[in-house]
Length: 91
Picture (tube, helix red, strand yellow):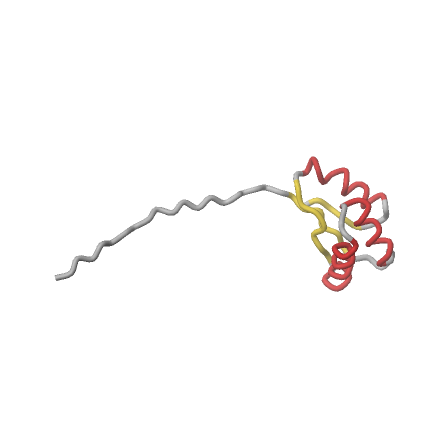
């Protein structure tokens, strides 16, 4: 008879649960791609590639999350986007 040893390991999974909020930008028929891209680079510190991708998603899907973080961090950025004439909100 053979002896089989059963090994059970306890694995602890820790998830980083965060309650981050998002700035969501919405499509409009007023602003140009260049204006949206330039504003995302300036306000949200996007790279040119990130800003261009976000602008395309906004155009084709109607909205896009452009930044995540705490409400305290996002509020000034969202206000700057709104002052630039873009449609955005914190969710």
